[in-house]
Length: 343
Ligand SMILES: NC(=O)c1ccc[n+]([C@@H]2O[C@H](COP(=O)([O-])OP(=O)(O)OC[C@H]3O[C@@H](n4cnc5c(N)ncnc54)[C@H](OP(=O)(O)O)[C@@H]3O)[C@@H](O)[C@H]2O)c1
Image (tube, rainbow, N blue to C red; front, side):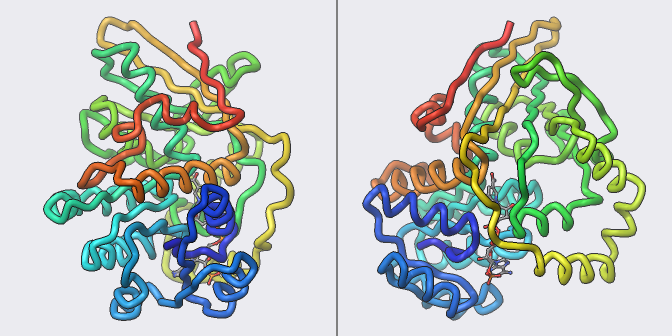
């Protein structure tokens, strides 16, 4: 089942699943939107609000794997993972949100007991970043520090904008295995995204948790390339994040973001670049770079591929991360993906 199937990313994932020969059941909270999209592809559909556990339980009858594409995941991940654990279905989602990944990680024991896999973040981020983190960790086995940096998105979907707005005041870093607050955009570092070294600013990507689980490296930082726009946005988060995080401001931003357009336009020819750098106590460093197709397009491929593997019985029970189960080279199996080690 794809939940949130009629959203921008839900549609991409569903279409890629169909290309793999799967026939997912489509689900969402808006019967009209889900039925229209299911009709286009001649797929079954169901309706359930995440606030209605009985309806969700009913919708999950006979379903083996759920791919949750409905974000912000702060609202949807836990209710849908709950429903999966009750119904005996594996849970996947395409979040990159740290708190929702942490919430799913806390259900590890329950999932293991039920022999179900909970794998959040099977989209561009964190599949690409997780595989690259596993790659540099393998090349430097005693690394104690890991930095991951991503180039900018070209455009944001409505769901991604809502997700960002929810997290304006939530800067975090992983130090000595724990999560510690660190204001967004307060640390600047240079990475080579393929055109010489350029500046990047700290943000709180889901990799702060997933890379820790995948590599065991206890100090993790995540960055995004510093364009004038990201500098301005992260600066605003530092100055006004506390204000934007209040209930009235969040309500206003949520209403405003509902009016954002659904269509992102063409992604043709657009690529993403990820850099990962591991360092050990002796100061040795290894660094690698990965180029992938545009983030939303690539999410369709990675999420559909992982759902397909789980359906075929290729999964590990409990909370899992993509590279831990499918290996650091998993990402290289997709078209137009290239990895290179940087000296
Ligand atoms: N990790 C990655 O690399 C990656 C890549 C792509 C997307 N994402 C994330 O995926 C999420 C969705 O993005 P998108 O591009 O598909 O956005 P979108 O086009 O706005 O679609 C969002 C979908 O989620 C549904 N939804 C939102 N809140 C819901 C709720 N409380 N209950 C039930 N359904 C809900 C929407 O339903 P309605 O149509 O009924 O409103 C819609 O189907 C975002 O959080 C985005 O950041 C992550």
